[in-house]
Length: 419
Image (cartoon, rainbow, N blue to C red):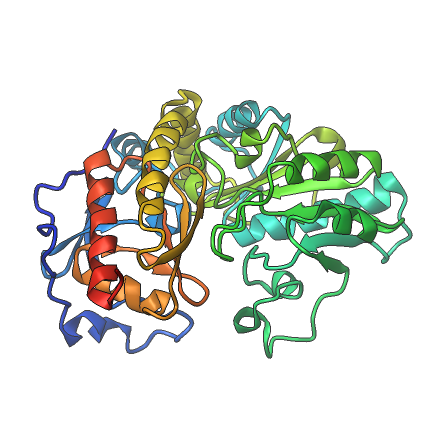
């Protein structure tokens, strides 16, 4: 493990001075599509990062699960450095010696027999949509141009034009129409509503096993098994977007594993690139992914040798089961500590593994304000809707550091007037 330590961390109960305006000086020419906290990171090790002034912070966001294995994991950095000296890009016009082994290893990890590599998570989702439509027309026999995909209210699958077409988030959706048709949205966690929405043109159901951006919403335990049964019975594909929830984050290789479900397609990304390069993939069996033929989908960088080398190293780490077990153990500890704050400025806690959504009493502060105060105390977290914040540290985080982070949250809540 490469977890860093608290050796140079801010002392619990003290406040870290916020950076001066210098910290934002390098953002003058950036488009304003993000609203980051006022901290400028310069380096990182394990679960810790250091800003341009030398101050250290515990990273409790892990780049939305892209850094499941922490900053600068030695095995992943070594794989990247070794490949940099050999070849980094060939395009898919030619074979490269890293892609085949990566696909073999990832398929084995997922229990499937085919991998379609891409770069970003949104590309994996777009790919899954295209595959589902092609399967619907070419295998299921849906009338051309009529295929529909069922999604869930509150979903977050990315921000491309097609994906925001079925989003409920007006920040992501407003003023970007006209929107792509072919999607039906139903309440998340309601299997009966999902089944009622299925008709002869339904080709797939696309779901997050846990809704991340919505606030780490965990559905009822029986929900995903019911979705699997319903989709199988109706000859509809079940596509699981495990881009944030997968690859160790929830204490299993996939969150679907935690509820005993195997989808038709896994959508993977974020942690698959080890926090080093963008790597995503759609993983399934040949009877589904095999509907694509040469020229029908692709990416110049998808499956590049650098990405494949890092992805193989990631799969090798996960194949040991060590990280999944660590996320389970530390996640139980984190959730128990957070639940001890219920009624003391926290009104709800949800999560699985090292992934927690924390609803702050809105009478105290917004989620943004809580994250700003946490930053002053040396903890980096991120709010989502309203007064909800997320804790999702790298899996390599040390238990003592995790306890310290919860102590800082408790101190912030007391500062805000919680009792």
